[in-house]
View: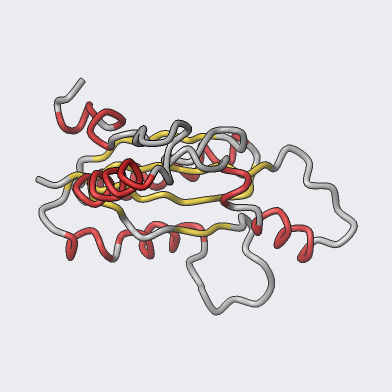
Amino acid sequence: MPLYEIRTGVFASPAVAAEVAGEFRRFLTERAVPCEQSVVGPDEPTPDAVMTVAELYEELPEQWAAEHPGEAPGERRVHEIRTGVLLPSREDVAGLPEELTGLLCPDSQHSGPCAVPWTAGYPTSEEEAEEAEAEEAATGTGGEEPGRPGRRLGEIYGGLTGAR
């Protein structure tokens, strides 16, 4: 089965980010979707090592500040919930980001801000990640070192694929 990664940025305290990741895991487990997760903080590099998680999701603290004028963010920081899933096809994984973020914001038409500002990316398959890495390696546009690909999904989610 293909391995896909769903990345969700949140602006929350470390405890709340961990709670959200737990909700995602419960949701996927209830649907018998094999998954593995990690929650990374603002100073961690993005998978392609081009920027930090804080830089990738820089709009989230700005959104929170605009919606909470004069309030201090407290322990809130940008985190990324990285969820690896094994599913038969892109069609099977396509709706998952929306379903997962629905746990953060069950009523997309609500008034006012979400309690936890968030954003989600489109799922990436291991094959797509490898194609992007090959392109970056050929052009020298990715990774910390020119020609050095970023992380491989199979290495990150080896517990799912048996690669560890």
